[in-house]
Image (cartoon, rainbow, N blue to C red; front, side):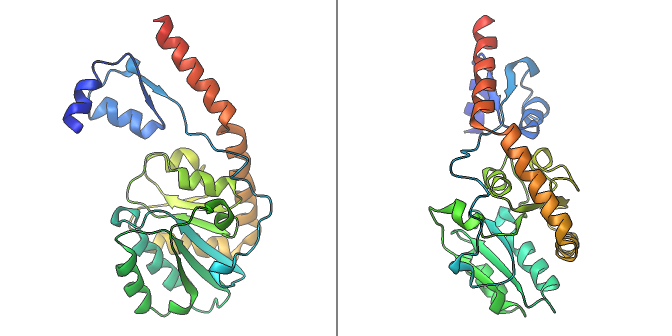
Length: 242
């Protein structure tokens, strides 16, 4: 597939990417000419992903504060790091819950990791669901601990739904999160750094609320369907004019 892509990359009149990191990869690793590449960020459906009606959801089994993630349960998502970090910070914080929403090959290893931890009674696994927005509105701090990402729809959706985001410093995550303003970033695979981020937000709930508000505002302002369609229209016009 990669060999075929290298051929088609040189036959087309334009290539649309959804973040700077993919743009840099094509230029630096695949030697695609810069003038072929056009960036258009993903768009959010504001009618579905919004912060209104935020409420606790029964699937998370209570908890005054819910730390959560929504993703495919695959090794590259770094979820063992999230479980390890939660085990570190949950001691003495009986009001916490960790919600892991999704399905995939990492489910059984994660369940075993949780079973051997001291926080098994506070971790909830929820199967892949169709009502993702409702579940996101029940999460206070959303964590994306992936080893690699392009522009994560899951992270964008969480920000739009009013979660305070914490993500690894990889790929498009650094374009979505303005550190210390719209969320926090940490090094992939570093559970100690993630623990520090989570403790910071838990100890300063006002700061977490401000970051969640700023993240939500950015999604509404810069990642709407209208903004994305306007950008795509501009790309088409540029290519056709050429």
